[in-house]
Image (cartoon, rainbow, N blue to C red; front, side, top):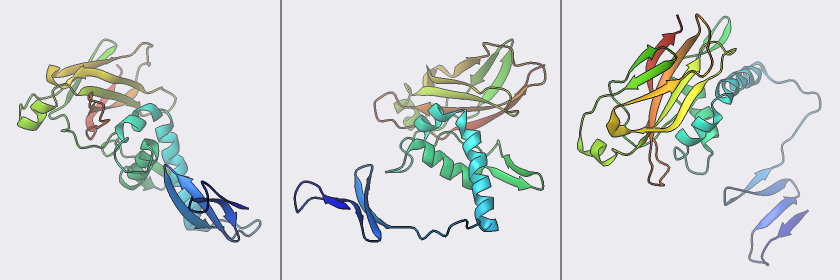
Length: 217
């Protein structure tokens, strides 16, 4: 049964006949009821897409807080997590005979309008990974000197955890670090990423940059 909210001129909510009146993130919209067949099997393309979708869900599961920040302003009326799913499904998955793989050099945890870090380098120092980036001093970057870092060390083997840092050093400092608080183990491999996030309340971010991979000796 549908309901009229706030009087006869208000929005409708609920089901009327074969249509459903809905509201999401402040937007009223109408959708039709799906026509479902009992015990129907998905087509091969549907099954493949579901498998691809499930794969990316698992890849993002361990870094949800980061992608919520990094993709917060990427698309209106869409959550950061949903935007990260949509972008990486298109851009960062490789399929071969064994199934789906993540293209680490294309994977992104942040997309935004701020200047991205340039000439990023990483180095392993004991249990610390040190990130450095160039100080180019162009006009737009000078305006963003107090952006804060978001750092990610993403494990190639899912048995290891991801290591990250949110709201780290300011852009102008030119370096930041992520510490391993527990020993990952010899041979563990991590892919390193960095992005910037605004500290002015705008929730703007930069594109994340792939900085390369490190392996624990």
